[in-house]
Length: 380
Image (spheres, rainbow, N blue to C red):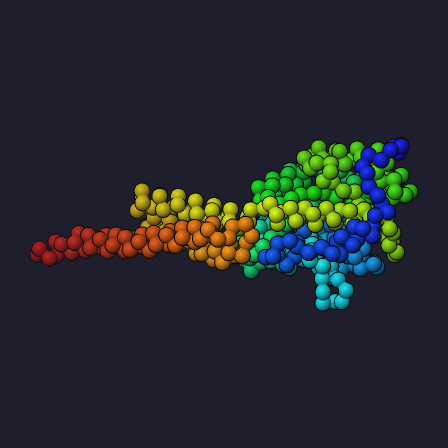
């Protein structure tokens, strides 16, 4: 493998202290958010937990291991939806950004985390410590389901973690799942980036010196290959080396980790600034579904009597529960929330009116039945 004479990406590895200070000084620019949530996803063994430990080590200035790591099983060691906070100063204070680690993606449909569970996590519906079930998606009836997520519960930046030495080995099934996740995040307005781990194992030049990272032709090729597979732009992909066998920190390794972390924070801030609250979109979708239910109900009263009235009431109840959450969201306060609230109340009145109509309908049917079956006796 040959090294390039000029770096293919400009980056000063000596700017560790600048990036470290930037991260230490960070505060969310959204008054409703106490922290910025970063969700890591990717195939089994990609280094998601190791990256969290590496970030924690850099910020603590010492080696840490809060996120448990397994390098031997070949299956996902992380089984639960786990939130990791980075300690700041004393044990009771933390930096205002958190990481969520999840079960890894696998080729088989009945193994690894399900794509739908990741969608729910991005919307804030998955509670901390929920144990993923590869066979069944989290449902609204499960204790691990959060029915009314706040802005803090939702994901603000999505990070795909891929090992650089396994880019060519990604199965079509895993790539397909990652594409589904990417599309879902795009529809929610969640910014996305990727990190390539194990860069020292993928390239001998980088293994010799981490400073060769942007001189490595092989590593550049791997990043381009991954960009082509997932459609993630090259300037949103960051090579990192996680700490695994080391017992001391290294400034150049820290610099790559901090560079990626700073971008995650900046991307999360973009969501706070530009993102339309996903809960509002979800509520509007619910409203449309309720409208369709009522329309069908008016067209077919018998069908509404058997099924759709209860379904409509259930949707209305969910919509009402979410109104309080909407009022805390940035970007849809004031008039917009007021209009949605009015619409919920109007739909609720329609449900009440429909129930009254249905009661008269049932009474009418019973009276007709009584006349039909008791009429001859009365005549006798």
